[in-house]
Image 1 (cartoon, rainbow, N blue to C red):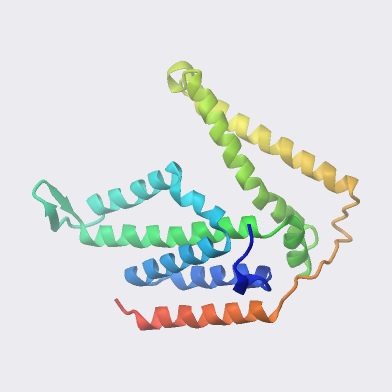
Image 2 (image 1 turned 60 degrees about the vertical axis):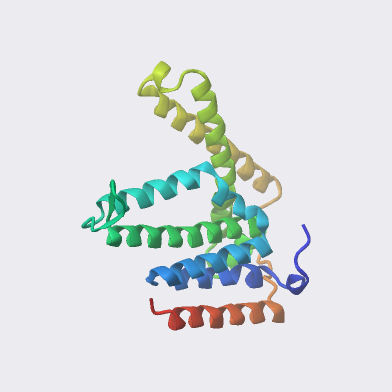
Length: 237
């Protein structure tokens, strides 16, 4: 997919740096500010990497949102607000749950976009330039394993459910699921390590690639830094 024209000269810093600023700005912010930052994060991700938005439409995220907000709204404090005659909610608990959900959206989108936006070489170059020998490669492998692990976990769960699930295996079902996911992840890690060794990778002599930083990158980061400051200081709700 082609990048927008204003992002044509932007590197990883210009595309992903604003997400770090948005994530830091959402920490400790008020409810309205959090959701404004969440909306800004979604808009930026939709422009930079629309594929990362798939996580927000997944059933896993919807279930996470329900289990996060509903218990806090019902039992997170005095239930003094009754939107319906038969329903009483806690305003403080609802506010807390919505704030946590907004921060989760910002963090979720940021992590998903960074994982898909940085290659294994970029991770290695970025962290090994800071003196962390081998850690960049390890962290890059871990991040890039996340989509594979999630996909294999979903496939294993559907296969287990088709064979009866808890009704057929009882409490052995979670153990079987965990063993399948872990063994598959370890197999993929072994394949990646073998491929790295075949290409002559040595953690004691890492390849110090250069992370390109352009004027567009600095301009985008500066613009988003100003926007985050304005949002935090301008909204005192």
